Image (cartoon, rainbow, N blue to C red; front, side):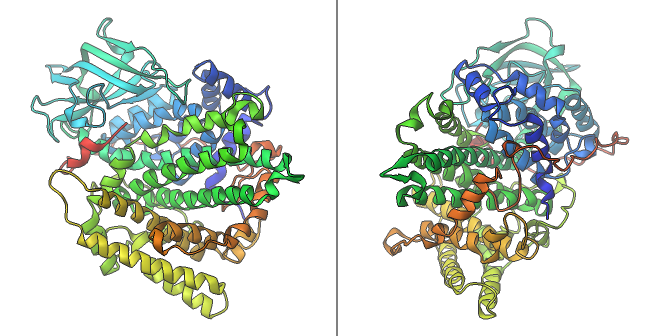
Length: 617
């Protein structure tokens, strides 16, 4: 059975062609060449325009094709797998426009959508040189005038600042600042008077060397009143809600890069011999490969449920998006260098193996953890919600939308931006439904449907998660700083979410995945047992961790090698890559009909959040 959410990703991947073919504009060889020359991948971005990707940056209600954030997740994943510079260089327009989807009036959002569909590039300008992630300290000002606003000041480390046609700018609109002292303005550079702005020089970066990481400085730039996105003073809240959507896409970037890193290393390990044996057959090498595979499956489960939750449980996205943005990039920050150990010296070379693609992947991935709130920002977001998470877990609160979240075969409801919240009132249903999932596993084991080893894992997991919530309940917030142990508990909560996500996915989807190329992974809970093995090992205190025989990992090696040999994405779900050869992927939907007349403007958003000063770009 097909997995419809991969349709757009397959359309893009096969449209760009086999990345191993150097004649292709988006080949791996060309991407490495552009990176070495620190050149922006303009031709590849133009090819993505031709393939219609900008249509999926615009929600259907505003004239585009975006109906499923799960579908967009896999599209970003497949592009990052080919080249992260391309993924962020092109995808930045989605990031620049997302504040309109979250906070603008429907009429304004349709105007922004029309710009995107017409090919305009949009950038998001939040950070400043002297203030970094403390957005409430920003000094760029927007002083009201009779006709609109006069913008002054400099934004720095802005992706596509030079290439963008429009820039969504967070500016101080009240001299005193504060959570209601900043607003978002969509500044059209094409309409600014000469001399009222200048683009700053491109900054040289360790990774994504071809990206336009630069800045923009305003000097008395006059913008019209309709440039205001949402209500005056609502900028902080709109930003905080917008990053809940974009953080999930950052997790997709990590998945794409780790997929390609694993593939490169498996290529090498299959063909290279050491001690008269293929490297892949040596215990240390195949353990490293299967552990990386398990990390990818854990990251996929976490990301897919978070993306589906955008539609089904949007009120909990302040929790789930922080989990995904912390856990997946952090996990892959460890996984990719470990894979490099199998390559040895070749991991550091810019030639020899795959033209140095691995070292580019390792460099590029380091920036993902900084996007949309760095590691500490996302952990602190979880720490701030400990009381609600504990309360929801103890009461067993579950949002009715959890069913749509975890059953991949169910169609997703339309995304309702009005349900986004700065703090979750219901906690986190994926974790809070864990005790019920564990009970169901035990029933399946008793009935002989699930393997007995799964019962022990489920019971161990339940005990660890119960204990975690007891420690979270005992935590008392500090007035000036968050202690290290609170960040540790937040990290453990992210692991608990991932484990619960894996359980729910297997329980709710094992019936319809009984055939097809990924069926062996599901039939005996093979992937689930390996993922729980890894997550339980990370949740346990070091002193309580027993010997690791690795049998759960070893069972996955044939599946890993089969997906590699057949040119399929390393995934729980079937997806065929362009390098596997020609196929007829499921065609993406037709362009949506033009949007109807604008509805009434929504009410002013609720109070802004104190955590805005922690959002990093």
